[in-house]
Structures are given as C-alpha cells and as structure tokens.
Length: 347
Ligand SMILES: Nc1ncnc2c1ncn2[C@@H]1O[C@H](COP(=O)(O)OP(=O)(O)OP(=O)(O)O)[C@@H](O)[C@H]1O
Ligand SMILES: [Mg+2]
Image (cartoon, rainbow, N blue to C red; front, side, top):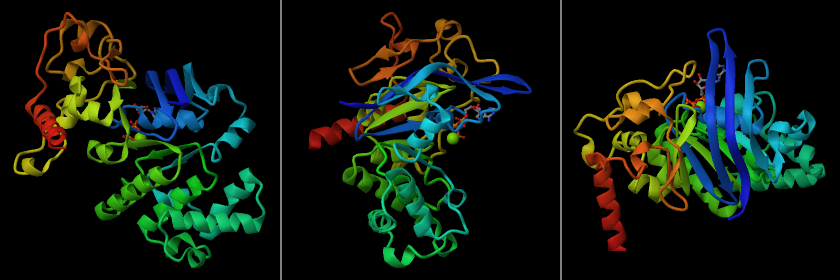
C-alpha cells in the first residue's frame, strides 16, 4: 500500500525548569493512502506531541526534535522552511482539535472561514470557492448550507461547530487529516454523530486520517489500524482486529480490560494500577514495567525491541522473546478473543 507519511525514529524533548522532558522517545509509523490510523494511549503518552510535530506546531521556544524524520511525499517536514511548511499546513495536511470554539473565529462568518484556505491554497475565484464551501458544508452534514454560509459560529450548536471545523480542515482536499480527540469536548450523543460523520467521510474522500483518542471503544468503529502509545513510544501497532483480539503488550491488555462492555456494567471498571513514567527521568527498561504484573527482570534493564507478530502487527514487549515464559492474557482480553472467534465462525 502507498505510504503518504512516514515517521522514522522520532525523538522530541521539551526544555523545562525541571529539566529535559523526553516526551517522544523513538516513534516509528507509516500512514497509508486512504486509511484511518488511530493513536490511543493514556494522558501524557505523546499522542498530541507526535502529531503536532507533523504539523510543525510545537512551541519553538522550548521544544526540539532531537532525532528522526517525518517524510511526507518524500520530503522531510522537519527540515522544511517555515514558508514551505505553511503551504503544506492546511493544504496537504490539516488538523482538527478538541474544542471547536477555539478553532473558529467568533467574529467571522462561517462561509468566509471556509473560503479563506481555499482561496489561499487553491487560487480559486471567489465564486468557485463559495461553491466549494457550500459543497463541503453539505458533505459534513450541515443542513441548508447556503443559509448557514452567512452565519456566525455562535449561531451553531457545539456539534454543528465541530462539523464546520471539519469542513474547514477538508476544504482543500488534504492528503492527511489529523483529528486530535475531535469529540471529547462534545456530549455523548453528539460524539456519536461526529464519529459517524468521520466514518462516512472516510468512505467518500480518499484522505488518510490520523485519529487520536483516549477511548479504545471508538477505535474499532472508525479505524483500520491502531497504534498504542505509552511513555513516548508506540508499544503495539496492528490492524484493529489484531490489536483488539490478539493483543500482545500487557499495556494493551490493560487498556482492553478497562473498556466498559455491556455485561460488565455491574462490576467495577478495571483501571490500570500505578502512574505513567516520569519523562524527566525515563526508565532504563520497558517504561511500563513498574505497572506490569507480567514484568520480568529484563523489563527493568533493557528496552524491548518491536517484535513481529505478523506482517502488519508488531509489539514491544519482552514477552514476545522466544525464550520468555508464555502467559495467557487476562480474562477480559480472552473474553473478547472468544467473542471475536464466535463472530468470525458465525459469518
Ligand atoms: N509545551 C510543553 N512543555 C513541556 N512538556 C510538554 C509540553 N507539551 C507536552 N509536554 C509533555 O510531553 C508529554 C506528551 O504530551 P502529549 O500532549 O503528547 O500527551 P497526550 O498523549 O496527547 O495526552 P492527552 O491524552 O492528555 O492529550 C507529556 O509528558 C507532556 O507533559
Ligand atoms: Mg493530547
């Protein structure tokens, strides 16, 4: 499959009063044409920093890409001039954030806000840009787009505003769309609608999508592949089926065990014990080791490499070493595996 984006051995640090925060510690992944890749992981695992680096939106004052490349159509974005990067941003790669209100200008009509990037990047006439803006409002499910075009953000509900933000991001047919927790600030029903929209868009347009979320539950619905981040690294990556139904990393086991399901509502929801690593002083071994019930001596001493599970599935845990003892995953994970097998056999 054609690669649109290749992130290679990315290391990013922040300089703070307390010292150097090693936020991203060797991240590698590819994004294929037309696919949706979900990035999941706890707060602070590095999801936003990784994608802000792609957009070159990290604060210049205290952040530094220490190592690595971000290749977009063969160009290393980390080395592009600010001027060239401005052309990439919004046109080739665009990003939507959690809170639609901060992304919109409250004093400017919606239509104008959609037209701006189109006129800037695509050099269309005003009339052609307006036509495109109305098309795209329609595409993201805004009723009466001609009328809505003339309105201001405060005349839209939260969910409708997020649709407008998505419209602006899609206005120039970007090759990559990064959605950083696009539904977290919205209420549950609206969340579901926006996720449904993302799913529909994925079918209608051939933009590749990076979808960041805390919520493993939404991943199965929207993504083709999943990358699980922990402590500034990707610890497991694979297709949705592989990561959900054949997870290998104990951290992924923990995430899956902490997902609510219909028949576990009576029980108390599982939470992974312990706290994330201190990235001012990253641990020598596997960053998850102190929270890992399956940790071995080597987990505390050496960082595991990415072991291959299949051509599309990799995980960084010493449990995959040929000499490691074999553990059964926790009951909640096994239950999902069984459900999956039953579903497959049923088909
Ligand atoms: N401007 C900054 N200065 C110092 N440290 C930062 C800065 N931005 C991010 N970090 C650190 O980088 C690490 C990764 O942060 P990031 O925002 O990528 O997490 P995240 O996975 O997106 O979390 P969340 O789910 O809460 O959004 C964290 O340890 C965070 O404290
Ligand atoms: Mg974030």
